[in-house]
Length: 107
Image (cartoon, rainbow, N blue to C red; front, side, top):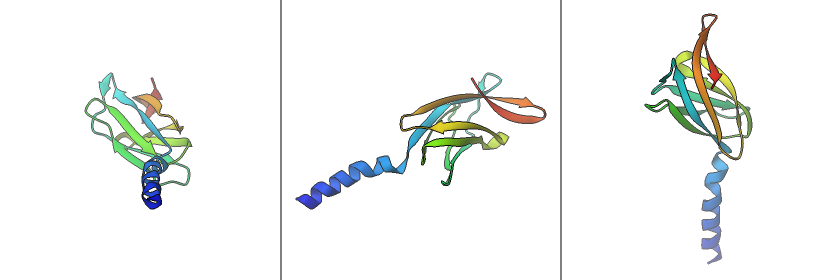
């Protein structure tokens, strides 16, 4: 019986150890959703967490580490600094073109 209890406790704790936090939000360009665009979130010394924006420009990605990370919108080669916490973090961005390059600006 002890082995079964330990197994269930291990399974309950394991998923939370996979990801430190969740980063979510939306991305628009010119007031319109940036749909179905690949995103990568890179945190120090970790493999990037990958996802895509939805049809409405929203995204929700679990990241492997706490602290400062970089969110990259791959279609535009634009990036921004984001922070991962134990609780979810929301970031809404607008894609803008400045000096011939695309940038992500917080809304």
